[in-house]
Each structure stands twice: as structure tokens, then as C-alpha cells.
Amino acid sequence: MLATPPSRLFLGIVPWYSVLIVTGICLALLIASREEKRLALPRDTVVDLALWVVPFGIIGARLYYVLFAWETFASNPISVLFVWQGGLAIYGAIIGGLIAVVLFARKRQLPLGALTDIIAPGLALAQAIGRWGNYFNMEAYGVQITSPAWQFFPAAVFIPGADGGTWHMATFFYESMWNLAVFIVLMLTRRRMHRTGDLSLWYFLLYGAGRLIIEGLRTDSLYAGSTIRISQVLALCICAVVLCIFTFRMLKLRGEQYLLQLRFLPMLVCCLLAMGYSIYMALAGVTGIEASTLQCAAYSLAMIVSCITVYTAEERP
Image (cartoon, rainbow, N blue to C red; front, side):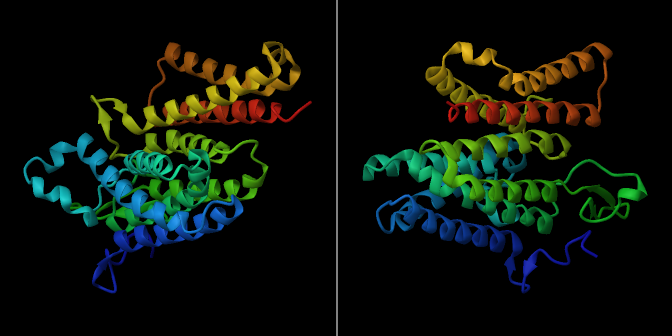
């Protein structure tokens, strides 16, 4: 029944895509307001910040998508404005929103890390909700599923076509559930962060780790060239930057000799397994979506375990 959306319109008038995005933004603002009080920021900081972040985020999301998919709009440039038809890239929204936060922080003389921390949990929840807009637009789905055993929702979605239609991986659902998990983790751990800004770093790490895997399953990725998926490259770079930040901080606090202790063994094992798997795939000439997905999963696991290991080392005597 849910394999194909009944309609793209809510109450036959407003696109579901727009309704879900607005709902996600409203919930994100509600959560940010609660975090504003917890971090003792000035009253109405979230309201004022939203007037900057929301428009910057929407514009950034659209510009990013248009930049890497210009061939879709070249014949009818005015369609760039038709955002209700889909075509918003979350990385563009994050970049645009981050620019707005930086400008706002400088103007109001507020700590940048605190501002990003109040946004991070709600952003993850908004992403989880917003992904369902892809469901109603019948976009952001994955490769075709031919096995009848997996032709059911939410494992797959049915995409109508001239030949009757085909079943595809419900990658929008996979990412929605991952983002929901990220939201829960951030909410449960936000009071245990070592420093202001750490919650934001964990958001970037966890979101990037999930996107690295799921993006490889999609059929509508934005590419640089013919083979490089932009979102996967960005996800891997973001995870690497967060790991470098945590590692640098730990080394500055504990010293290089601290890395030689056995508590870092899980991190080293995961990294070596990920590297070994990649080398094996290259030498064996193994290709295909299963191989690439497992490879990305290995990288993501190595990044997460490494960051947990290094981050928790800061709090040990």
C-alpha cells in the first residue's frame, strides 16, 4: 500500500515536499529554543538566528543542486525557482546555513560553537522528516530490486513507468531512519560533551558516516565527472576532518605516547580492516554495488570507532 505515494499534494493543494520541509524546520526551531535555555544564550537568539539560517539554507540547498545538475535546468532556466518540485541538496543547505551562523555570531558577538550546538539535534530531526518529501516526489530512490523477496515497503518503493514500473531501494527511508538515530544519539549525549561545539562535530561525523554508505545505493547522485559522487567525497572529507580535530586535541592533551596504549587497539583494528578490505577489492578486481557498499561501511565504521576512541581518551586520567 505504501510502496507508491497516493498523491504528491497534501489535501490536494500543497505539495507534501513543502509541508514536510516546513514541519522539519518548525520542530528544529522548537528543539533549538530548548537548547538556547540550556546553554544560557540570550533570549530570542533562536528566533533571530532562524531569520538568517532558514533563507540562507534554502538558497544554498537549491544553488548546490543546480550547480551540479545544471543540464536539468539549462533548457528552462526559470525552473530553477520551482523548489516545490524537488531538487534541494542538504549539503548546500548546511553550507548556506553555516555561513549564516558565522555571520550572525560575528554580528551578535556570540560563541559560534554554542550556536551550531543548539541547531545540530534539530537539524538531524528535520532531515529525517524532510527525506519523506522524496517519497512523495518519487525521487532519491536506489538501484532496482529484482528479487520478489525484497519487493515490499520500506525495503523498496515502486516507481511507475512506461513498462508498468519497477521496484527500487527505498534509500530515502534508509537515510531518514539513520538521521532519526543521529538525532536520538545527539539528544542523549548532548550534556556529556567536553567542549562547546563538540555536539556539532558529532553531528557532522555521524551524518557523514551514514551518507557515505547510503549515497552509493542511489541512482540520482550528483557527480563530479562520470564516476565520483560529490556527496560521498564530502561525507568522507567531513568525517576525516572531525577525526583530525579530535586526534589533535587528544595529542595536545595526552601526548603522542598515549596512542601506543592498548585502549587504541579497537581503532587500529578497524582502520586496518578497512584498508585491508579496500586493497583486497582492488587486487581481486571485485566491483559492483555490494562491494562498494561494504567498502563504504568499513570506512564509516572505522571513522566512528576511531572518533569514539580518541574523544573518550580526553576524559581519562
